[in-house]
Image (cartoon, rainbow, N blue to C red; front, side):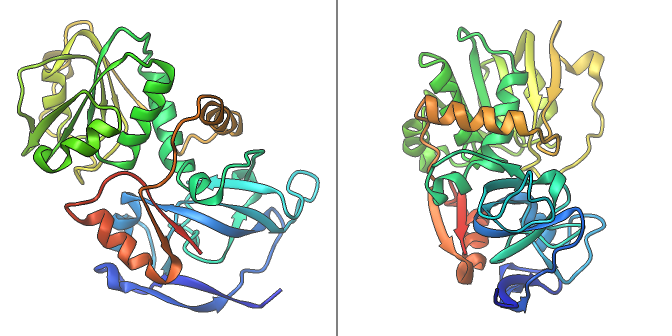
Length: 322
């Protein structure tokens, strides 16, 4: 095996141009860890936060990347992770506490490498692990039956679009509304993704008087209080994302702010289970869910992937194929 690989390294926080593609040594396998040949990875807002220096405890230089799909290149556990096996991995502090997937190879703890049987093409498979896993877990926590009016707050995000695909696969007649900051520019794309209604979201306030039975909250603490005001009595809010860049809430009074008889839940993609990941892949293939990414970049242009995701025209999931 070539002893060097190509990787996008961040030496110090900053704008997308701090992602420097360079040759670095291929990591050496050690007990409890195996080497994965990265065939693709999704780009996530959390990686943008890390690149900007906003993720506590991350030391530089660092290779970012909290998810990947690929094949086992060298294994310390050939029984469970034989060489050549298709695998996915998400979270577990990859790209934060240790180098992640923005590279041709990634050294990962065996415990967070999940063998999969999917034959989906690499670009599609690369779009699934973090984004669809998050949407799938949130869908389960919202306890839908098919009769509800559902709002996705932050609908143009990768998770928002993935959630819409999963919902309509399970409940084709579900009423689904989505919010975004520029509805005039995103209305057609959201309609094509399965949203019946598009609502303007300005300064953390929904520009509507409507209320909903279920809300997938992807903006997070920055808008959660306003979301409560647009949730029906007995409704459920699943706070999953933090696209608003705010991690904690000030001035939130659960007694006064939550809807009468309502429930606030959450989903964290760090709670990774192999059975749920494989159930997700089976659901996508059985229901023919369109999981293809909206943009595909190569590793040399990963900084352009970051620029796109940060830009005003971003929509859906972005992947990189090394």
